[in-house]
Image (cartoon, rainbow, N blue to C red; front, side, top):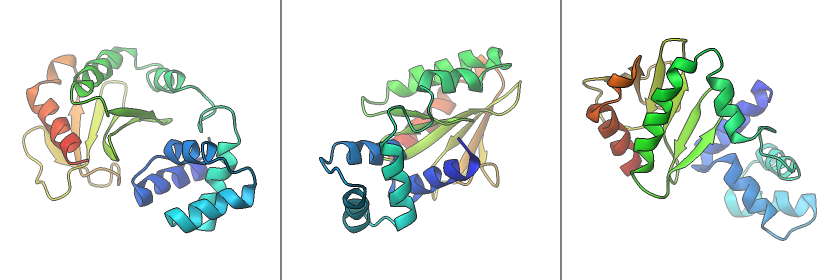
Length: 183
């Protein structure tokens, strides 16, 4: 997926609070057949601009996911050359799934977005030796293992750096759980 399309999809999620996959499913299940009808639905009922609506309608016509790869292969590709970090990801996901049945994973090219009604966190293998966890918790001061996300990723407010499996501890899980509760 080219970077401009990826940015558009991220912007849709930021503006609407729902993933592009959500909107694509909505269009596919709308029963509408004509392109213009689908655009009208997104614009009039959901406040989309024409450009975003057109992008979603075009993507809804594809048979595969918006990334044209399945989700597992996206995650696998993130850890190519970083295989030692995959157990960190797996342990984090195992813990996050304990929060509730409404947790949704939305893999992107470089990270996995953790969603409830909206994104509450992300997991990204940033280097060959470190996984970064982005947490979305506006108005909460970072402390302990959490630092300000700064310019690292504008979609989150906090960042936690994990270099080994032992660092996936109660404090890290509590940060994730708090973000989940606020999503």
